[in-house]
Length: 480
Image (tube, rainbow, N blue to C red; front, top):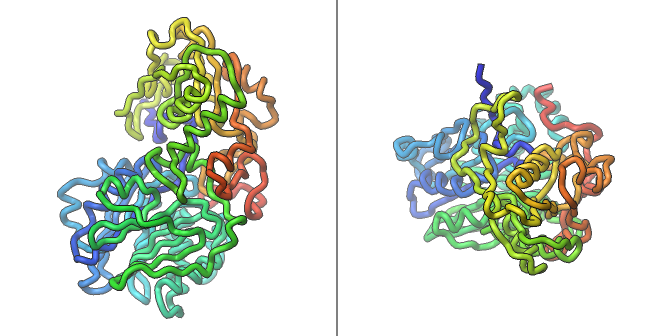
């Protein structure tokens, strides 16, 4: 029997949890197709499921049209289906699961009908106190339809709204109970709200197109829909968009030095054409490559990147070192999220299906191969082997992040320590395991420079988190 492999083919790559998108068109134009294109631009943030929910602010309160499904944006939505979704306000979501199973029930946006009307919510991140909040709600009679912490957030907002004067006050009340990483877009019948956790783990920004305002995870999506970037949502800020314009609530903000953005937005997650909190992602990766060349130089004939996230760092290494930059890999861009997994006995490997080596480019050359991270090491050793089988004389691996030594609890699926190749191993031992001629990681102290001095979270490298982590790994705990 054929085995269908339900994960992205790059099995040893980190995954982000989600991308969110919200829009309110004050001119009353339908927004579903705009959300579709916005999600298309955020597809790199999640390929498991997606969804759109829209409402008409001029119609009866509480009428929300929503559709979601498993797969890529272009697989889930058809032109005919979108044209039937009428409304001038809406939210959208793309998902990769780090907590909660990969099922249609767990796809977002979540739509709740409750005593005050309706609520549609899309969430990026991971709460570390979700089990306690969920248990509290369960004892209060809540019946859960999903196993994701996003539903916990939605329930708490709805519960706060019963006594709060406004929807944004309800969001603020819920935020006081949430611990962890979250960027939210929330649609009520007449308002679009965005909120970012006080540490700023996950990105969220504001855009404008004609007489419509947008809230979105990354600025690249604004370019896709022809909108202009207005500004980033501040860590801890609640932004409310109504017919009167944008209103800001910064009561939940904390001092800048306590903020802790996820450094992997700059290393890997975000698209290189995005700008997050004033820092250009592409330039961050160029800088990481330059730092690697300064700190881990090696004589070689060619610098290459592992597509796509390794390419900019490889160019930075080349610019700093003078070693020519080139292409060693051809990437099959047509591999979807589901494919027939090669059997152990067959010659095909999931890496080879996605990447092929340009033999003429690497034959008899000393290669510097730049990758963004090494997690378990299962992919790195295959890529090194592919280069050597293609005739590379030497393969020197440089990694544009420090070694992973600790798990992440904030929406990045860095696994338990025992699964990390660098855990309790020296750099030399890791080098031997992946078959490289030399191995160098980005130095820990370079991370702040790479993020242009912004306060960042380095928990997965140091074990020192910006807040007290859970005593045990709670990710996926609702299925246990």
